[in-house]
Amino acid sequence: MSVTAVIGSQWGDEGKGKVVDFLAERMDYVARFNGGNNAGHTVINEFGTFKIHLVPSGIFAKNTVGLIGGGVVIDPQVLIEEIEMLNKAGIGVDGRLWVSPRSHLIMPYHKILDGLYEEAKGAGATGTTRRGIGPVFADKVSYNGIRWSDFAREDILTARLKMQIELKNKIINALGGRSLKFEEVFTTYRGYYEKVKPYIRELFSLVQDGLKENKNFLLEQAMGTFLDTDWGTYPFVTASTTIPSAASAGLGIPPKYITNVIGVTKAYTTRVGAGPLPTEIKDTKSEVYKKFGEVAATTGRVRRVGWLDLEIVKTAVQLSGVTKLCLTKLDVLSGLDEIQVCMGYKLNGVDMRYADVDSYGLDEVELVYRKAKGWKEDISKARSFDELPAQAKDYVKMIEESAGAPVKWIGVGPEREATIRRK
Image (cartoon, rainbow, N blue to C red; front, side, top):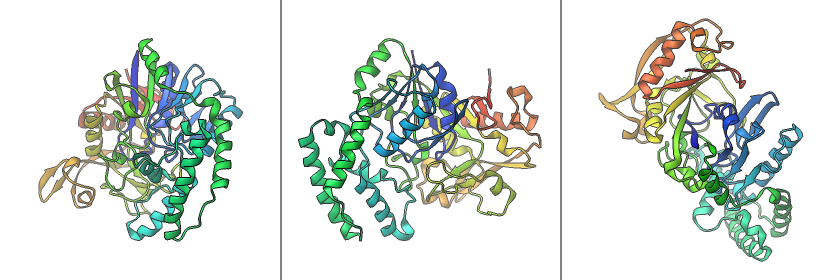
């Protein structure tokens, strides 16, 4: 039996979907335990190209069962669309995808409020995806949430939903929005429930029995380490805990069983939305900016880009007990004469760790850069470490030496097979 957690060691968008997809073949269960459909994982395999937001990325392995834990907040329309997309593509998720009845639902008022709050903040907006994630988590901890389990009792659902719509309409109106009608929301969400009902199942016994039977679990984190509510760049963070320990509350996996933690690290750094990005490249006309440029799978927003920041990768390794690293998008660096890597921070001449400064202090630190030699070769066809240019090998070794964890996998392209496995 093994329980492996896959986490992002930066600000998300590290390529976790691809990593989960190629690791899932040996797994009995693959599970989401945090976040919501604000996370977007792109998977490219023999079935095609898929952008997944709620269903675990390992669902393509035919003998693997997918689990969506109670720690995940769900937009039912998005979940239904993903299930239909996967079934249409021949993946066949019926009977091997289960959703916890403890999951909280993203309601229409959550998305409305998410947008109204951002607009009200003006220049101080935190750059949310406006998918209702923050408001639904706020409702969860303030006893105002609605879960799948509420739909089993229509009287309970009716009472709770009426109360929430009356309450939320007051806030929506105060912020200049339009009121919601109970009947419309109730009818729509009852329809969603009927479609999702065949997939709803209490996961506790399933998980516990699996642990006793020595099954293999793969836990898929949403977002990234530094979007964590407590350890991220607050307030420019997500609304859920993103480190592996969240699987205990979000799925029911005791911490002692999580023995493998894979930290997925992009060969450079990206971030979507507001918040500090110490190594950010702001010259949008530069060769490097254009080379690193990306579009977010979930929002379609252009990601901010920067050089690799090994201080945050090292912090993620220590914080989450990372045992192995998976380096992604190394191929993107091909063609650069010189690569800069941030090795640490200084503030007023004093060495600083990430944890020593707050989000605003990160904009004030002096970055300690190390220059690495680039390479010209196209490495997208490489399938062994020996096939990489010497400079690329040195770059990989520098990362694992600084981060304190071995690089066991190297991504040299978006496809599943474009992965080097180091012995």
